[in-house]
Amino acid sequence: MYQQMIFVNLATNDIDASKKFFTELGYTINAQFSDESTASVVISDTIIVMLLSKEKYAQFTKKEIVDSTKSSEVLIALSAESREKVDELVEKAVAAGGSVSGETQDHGFMYGRAFDDLDGHTWEVAWMDPAAIEG
Image 1 (cartoon, rainbow, N blue to C red):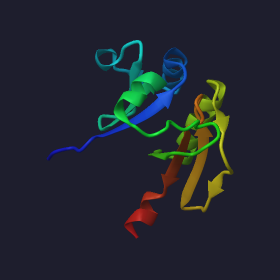
Image 2: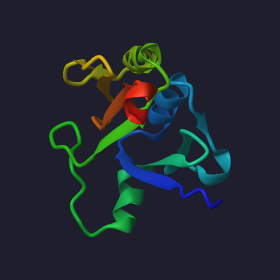
Image 3: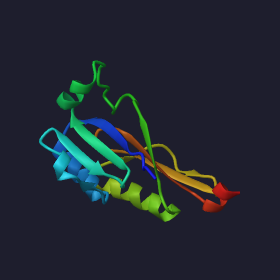
């Protein structure tokens, strides 16, 4: 069966700092699709984040590139396999220079937290009890 992929493209102020940030979260950089203006961050087999310098990003759009520390252009949500993994990823992000975003959401069957990366992009991390999904 064909596995559809998603490529999330984000403008960044500093490719090297962003590469360091995401590798500290446990993700890898695909060197084959990275250069001085682009970093290909492998989140999973089907999720790739393309970090682009603002100059490179501007080659793909005629729209103004937002300052993501002041405006929100996207909320990126990732699943986690447990509540502990939610906390672990957010704690790694903060240790790597990111910041906690918003309040912890704890609904019993669903648990989530969020962080902002170095450029202010918001990443939500959520766990949902498999029994709640099935039932």
